[in-house]
Length: 173
Image 1 (tube, rainbow, N blue to C red):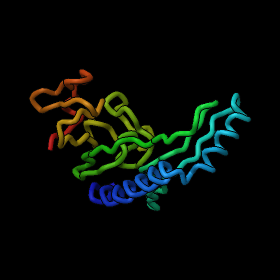
Image 2: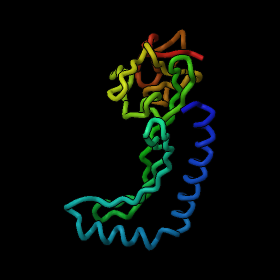
Image 3: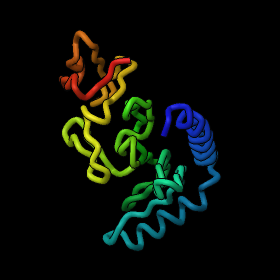
Image 4: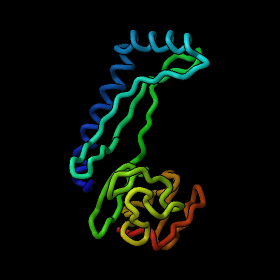
């Protein structure tokens, strides 16, 4: 997905996320959370219960959905239900000269599952490779590995996690 399109979609994601969080905090899901806990206790050793809210973008040409938000009401055992997030942070990529922005655990070209791109250099679904057809676009100092530390062109080793950027797999911009 092109960066401009992703940013527009992200406006919806933020609104939906804020509304779900507010409804939860205001007790609007109280009946649901009580039922989740009751059912979870009844089947405690079988599985845990989650109720998910998702925002997905479907591309009819790719015939794939891109999940951009997952918020769930979760419960395990006797604990009270809580909100949990299951989506990946967005990452910018340069794909054949075009800027794309997608969650970091998917391929920026085909939207297939592809996490840990600095270790797994090839998309298992479409075959594009890091350092060849696709590069991570670093336009901030945020480390793409831990997202807490900083990396720089002249200092490519993260100051928090120690991850060292493979210069052939990134484009500084």
